Image 1 (cartoon, rainbow, N blue to C red):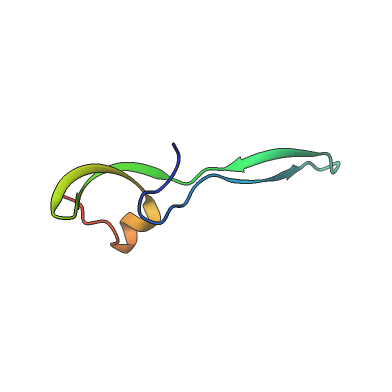
Image 2: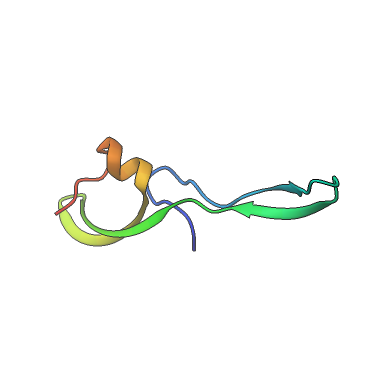
Length: 61
């Protein structure tokens, strides 16, 4: 579910490394918000990351 409908940004995976260098899996989740925006001339709710909202790629109502 954590996916931006504008730029397709989604969950990223990596490895958490402790001080003693023990390694375990971890995730980075994008900052997704549900906003009301105009898509192809019609208002609807979309999920967009805050980077797209801030840069003006989303035309909010």
